[in-house]
Length: 348
Image (cartoon, rainbow, N blue to C red):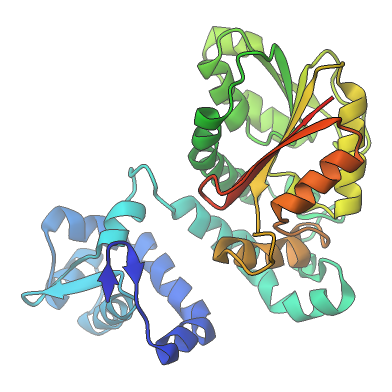
């Protein structure tokens, strides 16, 4: 049953959902591909024959799809007609503020093929799932440069996720005292653009690999934003950081790398900042006990198996210890911010 945002399952159904997880995912992906949820929403519900006609398929496969989605509590049956469940109305309708379509796309097209390699990745401690994607480099981010279509899918999801989680950071942290921020690994510029819009005095430099910053720079039309949102191509692990900043932003970067590599990156951030400068580390986090939440537990295998072969969703304690080890004299720690995120701020 579905009550007040929670789904209640028996132990057996919980195990079935794990064992048949690939099938559950494909039921959802197929519904999105056919636009089923929007069709049900606009019509107020359909029976099997109406759904089959709307989707342009035979009734038997329509029954299979509707049965599967209803068993997953994504659809409900009322008076003989299938309708969207509340969670679909909140998160699976295109145009909705919390639409999860970009996450489904990146899972389907970039991530899922590598997940059967998790056991070997655990055994060898490296991202063996990268074998499914040819190209240069030893990380997913480098390999994607050889696949512009997949790179666009990947950063569309990153931008969408950033918009949702970044809004709460902007409500939580005051950037008014910062003049120039460097967004390390800033991707498609989503965070930089939103920061510059929110704070008209602020200049933000996005520092990322060349193919990414080229993609990002094409997104800005506003003349004022083009002056204050800048782009610098480089390798964030080896190249010097852009100069003249009083803040360095590590948003959704810490989870990619090992704690040792993160500490070294943070030392470089510390050295690039003036006295009084700040470094903000913001990303998905686990709890300090290592027991959850589910977001952290399910995203961490992606970092090990595919992304870099060494990262995971770290705890706020891990983040704080790395920031202190990098030499920052005072550290703020903010956790349980929603979207399974934490913020650690190091003051130089």
